Length: 185
Image (cartoon, rainbow, N blue to C red):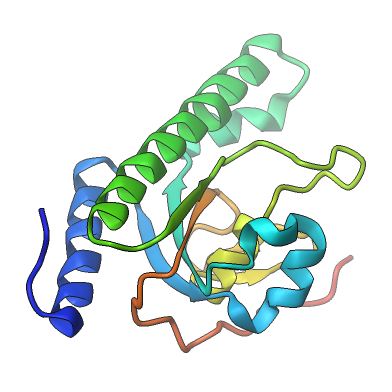
């Protein structure tokens, strides 16, 4: 489905993506301007990211009951529940939704590159082509804490993220949240 006038088209397109997010159980969708950190992300992701000035940041809140099981990591069943439901299943949902969003954006004439939610390009540095936590921060969803996780004001670190790179001229988030981390004990 294509939308009419260009300025309105982009606003309607982003609203349509957010509606799809509601249908698919996505809790966060925002636009991050990544050209401001292009040099840093090119260092890790290479030329793959250079054609894309923006990223859609997409997040799903993890079930509290599953995350709370990690208080007892010695119980195999608890670890298995977490790995299955808070990692594998959520990452698959994020990857599937990123693919759907990419098709919608591409059908409207823009370039896209969905990035896998959990794949690494460098195992030594444990990093992907682009940090999903960075795009979430630039989209205004939180700050990077002292544990290097994205901390959201409402859900803490209990959100899993993915990103879709695009050249679609969506309006970028302008408000980056300041860190509310205190001193570590």
